[in-house]
Length: 630
Image (cartoon, rainbow, N blue to C red; front, side):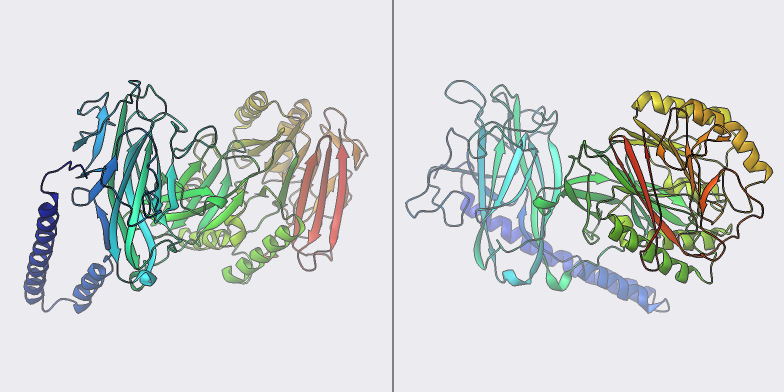
């Protein structure tokens, strides 16, 4: 074996001796300091010291790899390592490595030299850089071994690695993590390959939930480091740590009750939004479901404070169409994470399918908890009638109270259903979402947003959420025009809280009449196809309207400039209104005075056809169904 660090055998023992002595000394110092602190504060709350001790105990892990301590056997010459005389592969324990080098620390090269331009770092060890053809070597191979007494007690493995350009990590011959690897077109064992070029080395923290590759006795952790192409300028490798968390030290799972998804601007994006009383640093980890978190991407979540609560947000980008993804929340400090949730992106060219509900208005009924249970029931029904729904639209009034503490409780209940962790929800601002800071800091998506107006596009359909509480009518119309220009849609759907054509008691109020004057002609001019709204807690559907005039056609062919208006009822049953007396000439269908049942609508758009099917949440029977065509 070629020795990259002379006398490494003695060095290993000395390093272990130093580590043991240092750990023991640090332990006695810690005990002494804590003892002094206890004496000095003997009249203080005894629970403080107990909590500190529990926190220290809860951080124990088995460290298998530590940078600067662990010795790596490595091969920096051309060609994949051959199977040894015992039939073992290079990434398995017990492999014979007589002709491999050995060293500890970080490794790298910049055109065959050591300097701080190697991945933005100065490596400890210089790697051979050139092949026989004076080109960059395609792959470097690293391996080390460690001992495990009882693999059954390890419930999770985790690590941190810094590299340039791409890596594949193996545990006892089984692939457990890879990053920046191209999806096709290269040999993962011997070839050049990286999904994208790396300007400075990437640092990644990863975890491995499936620990079945770990075994009692000697284990091998092995790494391939790939260059992107033969003209690559540098290579870098530093496996900072690899550790096992014992089952008895399992970190508490993060409470994801306040977690929801929101739609991104386009189909290849998803917004993750988490409301919690916990202040800290959190990331979202996500990957394709088939990867099972051995190859995930991790994003830092932005944090805003909302009246003593904290809202964390992240935008997942570059998602594939028609793919199921897994994601979870992660505490950057202690590694605690939430349970895993899944979502599926829509396939392109297959139309759009979504759910629509009127006001949840949680808290307007007998209790917040009762309304919350009804809300969960409504979403369960929605999932049943349209299992492949891409998202949900709420007409506004997610909460009821204008008091901050009560409104926050209501918003938590709104967020609690599991369905909202798998299907994104697009909210509208209602007149009961009155505490502006609470609403907008919660739901304001990073990106396309203007005074609680926003839009997103899906497969030729524009969805424009209009803040009908605002008086900036002209600005909103211009914003809608801009959205149409930016997306060039085949269908245009506007969502808003106030219903301009309803059958309820608000239909003749001055504010509603003013909204009609401003928006109806504009919607006709811009050829808005469908307007979805709430507020009146009474289901109603208009004839196709041309500006302020009814065409008398309830369904069928929709001509240029005609718009269908649909007003949703209560989606929780927390509050209903009676029909306004007198005939409304624009109403084609409404729910009658005796219905008073929560409803949810499944809406599908396929080519030139739009269908709305509305069902009762009590028994899933069809309440209303309509189809319009272009």
